[in-house]
Image (cartoon, rainbow over all chains, first blue to last red; front, side):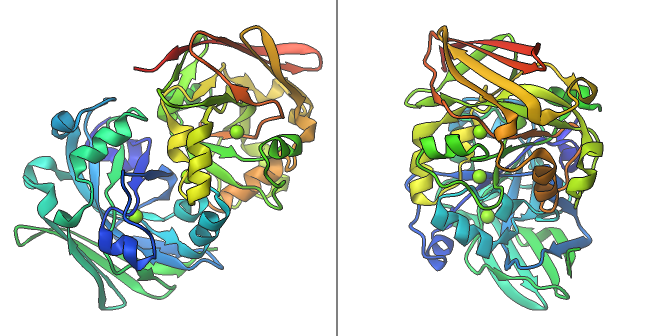
Amino acid sequence: MSARTFVQTGRKIVAIGRNFSEHAKELGNAVPMSPFFFLKPTSSYVVSPGKIEIPQGCVVHHEVELGVVIGKTGRNISAADASEYIAGYALALDLTARNLQDEAKKKGLPWSAAKGFDTFTPVGPFIPASEIADPHKVRLWIEVAGQIKQNGTTDAMVFQIPQLIEHVSRIMTLEEGDLLLTGTPKGVGPVQPGERVVAGLEYQGKELSRIEFDAVARN
Amino acid sequence: MSARTFVQTGRKIVAIGRNFSEHAKELGNAVPMSPFFFLKPTSSYVVSPGKIEIPQGCVVHHEVELGVVIGKTGRNISAADASEYIAGYALALDLTARNLQDEAKKKGLPWSAAKGFDTFTPVGPFIPASEIADPHKVRLWIEVAGQIKQNGTTDAMVFQIPQLIEHVSRIMTLEEGDLLLTGTPKGVGPVQPGERVVAGLEYQGKELSRIEFDAVARN
Ligand SMILES: [Mg+2]
Ligand SMILES: [Mg+2]
Ligand SMILES: [Mg+2]
């Protein structure tokens, strides 16, 4: 087991919602007063280059996010100690069946299906923590069918990574290889079968990760 | 990896909601027209005999359930083929911070925190599928502080196990060691620090599993 192999060995994906205020607003949501999260199954991982599957009847939205890969087990981790638990990072997409999510929200039902289809967590390779001295100065962008859709920096997070780790680990133990998705900047929108999705992660003007996926219809 | 070691090696817990109509009604919910589910993290497992931790400020309810342990990887599994994917069973509790869940439902937020605290999935040992020829004839009971609270049989499920496997696997691939929690009979209620929780699983009048936990305050 190692944080490097998080896609194969990790046991959970914890995804933060509405952690960029401009994104919360674009979906008509209030900016949260405290962090909240949902779980995605590890069966939703797909590595780059690969295929994103669009299930029939689903309006699938892209959300480009910074993933934090946990390096050691901890619970009740204080924000002050959080950096010791970070092994590295990964560029990730938190794909979402937006129509199913909207329905679930209206009915007070779980988000798990809307967020959990196979291939709904496309990821790039592990980036060691040493390559990103300040994870709140990362640029994330995504292009769909040749058009830039999201392009933001992690300094706009409502709750910063140490606070997120503190919040989550007061509820559930974080383990080596777990992935924490830290929320998406504004500009989310649909991905359709036949479209190509390319995303990048930059730090200090240098591209540390680029991922590429082809969207296809799920069978 | 083996289904027998699902607590140590399994990568997800998929839990079905409102699958017993009397339970749906006791919480003021409609009986669902199609199955729905949420995810619990594998970090919430605790094996019997053990301790259930009650977080401060949480009204924690017991839900005794039949767990189905998946034996091989599959997706788009038809109900007709579902039994091939079942390695065995386990007696389990789906502990729930009911006050947090009620708040999440009202706000259209995920159930993940309400369902995902450490120790919120107490389980008993693996029971090979061969010991339960018909999983819809299982009796489940739970006692809290010496009083019987739930006592029901799995023939009352709204959606039977093959349909549940078909439904979930159309969304997410099921993998060896995954646990499917199949819903709880009526009679859910609070568990408080200092109380002892004992539950049992019977098949054809024979007790196949008994689990025991002491509830303590979480620190
Ligand atoms: Mg959920
Ligand atoms: Mg997201
Ligand atoms: Mg339940």
